[in-house]
Length: 406
Length: 52
Picture 1 (cartoon, rainbow over the protein chains, first blue to last red):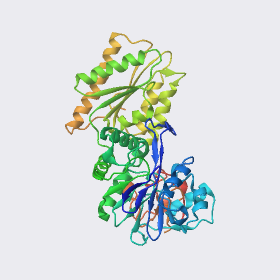
Picture 2: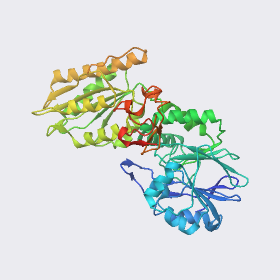
Picture 3: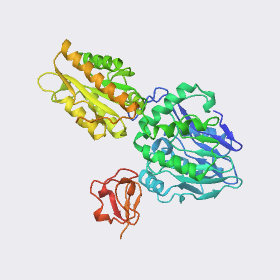
């Protein structure tokens, strides 16, 4: 239960959640952490707190360094409950001199905890606050990913406390980027961006530019979930710079659900068509692939081909749920097409096309429907669909315009 | 010309500046901002805005 030192007098005092496997619909197979940071200076400062249930772990870590009553300032970078759930009890115990937050943070704190008498100190963007030897600087990051979000920066140590940006859901005994498996780290960081931040890509782009313009030297990035980037903060910054411009990797995803394997037969033939064109693909059956893992592939894929049979004039619930989830995250810059088997009516293909149109995907095929079980000729049409999407991807690679058919 | 603030995220629409990135030219008063325009920060619609 020891705290971990990031720099002289700057400590990680958060909590490790080895148990969580579902974060409001996001599958967290490797658990997560709730990071909080303690700065010892003339004004002792605590940055963020933890989720309800982890207060004792937080306080115990703090007590290993200092009596919590000596904490003067509390910084709330983000009001979401996994970082603020224990605030009322912690504030009662610590009795801080200031609760530092952004303008929207103040509003959100009031609407969460209904405490008008906390000693709020609302910072304006760019404001500096001296703690004695160290100076804090605050960067407003509205809608990254909540209205209240902000970053805190220690000038002297060049550490950026980035709240929910640059993090990943990963429970480990290690606290730093250089101590963990790099493939696991980057997979979880990708999944985090795909499931939390895709929607805010235009703002991420602006933020990265803003940080460059401010010329803040960044030695370390300390997010609210996962490990602290002490050796290679440039690696995650570079990844965000790539993700926020929706650069495609040239691959296609066939995302589908099936009732009696007819739609699945179609999916496999479409995949064969993609391969004919030399395009790499993944077949992702929603029965066995969790939506948040699928989003991880969607983030960088160049084409999305959706398959679903028609059930009661609509889509199967897993596809409907997946589309609701994907639409919320609003991935952009994708080629799209749809297919599916049907019995007596076949609305699913139209519904999937509509959903993709709403996400501004470029539909390169009008969609393919097959009644009941496909025959050889139908499967040849599926291969053709694969060829059409594959050719569109090859054209994009060569810088050619792709024609939208619906 | 009145400024309008987004009640969701606090973004200020300043008619003198407009929102050129999203097709609203500088100098566009609030009542001439298209109904389908959304807050460039949080995506809320025009109904979420109030006079600053």
